[in-house]
Image (cartoon, rainbow, N blue to C red; front, side, top):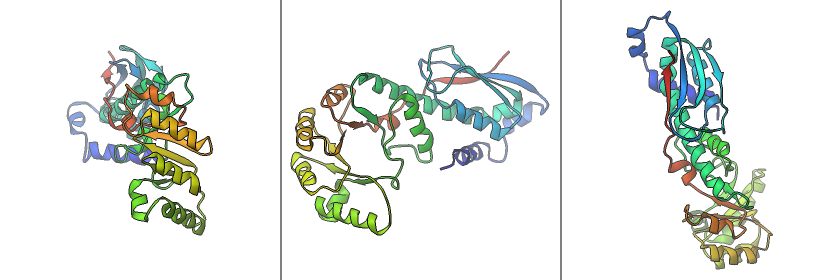
Length: 278
């Protein structure tokens, strides 16, 4: 996935046949400076994306950065200034903010979750619950916030979820069919399988052939029981029904990973503005 192409499409969506608001009232020779102001405490993300947006609109624009992605910011901070054609800066303004506000909101939320399990061995993962065509940037923002990415899409890891298992005719048939497919097509992909109860965990352990076992909608107590059964032979991941109130309880079990869809789909954008610098 090429981020430059995504930005190109975003600009085309916004500009259409022309930025007539700017073209109609601002002389093409007008030059000036704008600054990206932080209006809410959080974690900044998307500065490099903003540069790409500005330079696609006009490669002659000059950006001076004072912060970098991942920095914790407070109200009143200036992330960067941009100088050059007034028309070009105004044309890029909304697209820059749309990317940066969304990405900074994800980074801020992610950092909050990560801090909750600081000092514990469990790693936090995102999911595929992302905005269409924004996955590259949203998963980048998760990393900026301090968590890790799960698989990027359907192509870079096998995930045998409940529906796959049911359609395939059961856990064992799903695993065997997957192994056969990977071998036949020369693919080297890790396999994760979802389990819904301890009985299914036992079946996976007995059959083998996977790399990670997902413990879906297990309570912390059941997670602990499952980990005793698995005994470190497979990676483990807790998922489903995990909230801010219960996150530390799940991490305390010693499970390897906790996946949280809310990192990318329950997000409030961080308040930022791009204003004319007098």
